[in-house]
Image 1 (tube, rainbow, N blue to C red):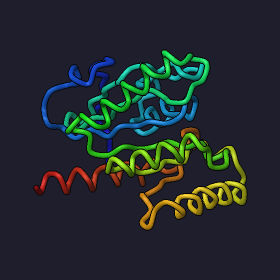
Image 2 (cartoon, rainbow, N blue to C red):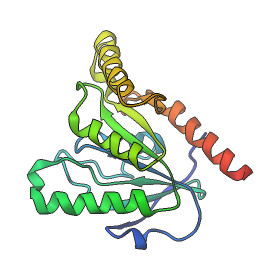
Image 3 (cartoon, rainbow, N blue to C red):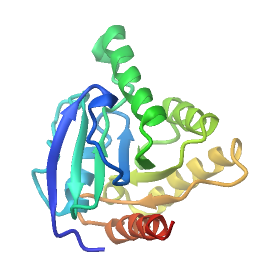
Image 4 (cartoon, helix red, strand yellow):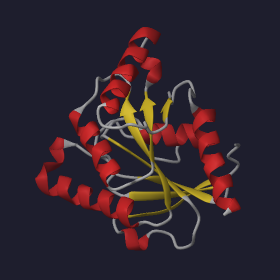
Length: 201
């Protein structure tokens, strides 16, 4: 799939204020500083579309980007940023959960995981929560260029092994790098195939 048009539409904290209509939405979520904005910019080929920040926990809004005038990328707040304080964390949790559970247009959730780290309890808990609520999702390993091949494969295999403890059938997963565009075609093709299936309904 080629992205010929990508535009910012709206930011808000209330799922009821998300754009009207029936366009499918592909939401991106992950722990703070996992590389979410960089990945969105890489996928769309628009360097400044999603605002990147060196400070973790900057995204506190639901951000909608209209792609090819036919579907949305949705940038959700990062979770698990301890320095937000309990009140801030609760606010973010409410924003995330209300969007994921109430937004009918949400077609697939992409859960971003830093490939440099071994399995983190906060990510595993979130994956379990998605499974409990029947949320369609795929895993996106980010920052794959930061590791040499052996360590990258080892970290991903650790995650897969850990997931097998909870899941009989694993969700799809992708290995990406925003710096060298690794995984871009695979992710966009995955989205395109889902869109084609939806258009046949």
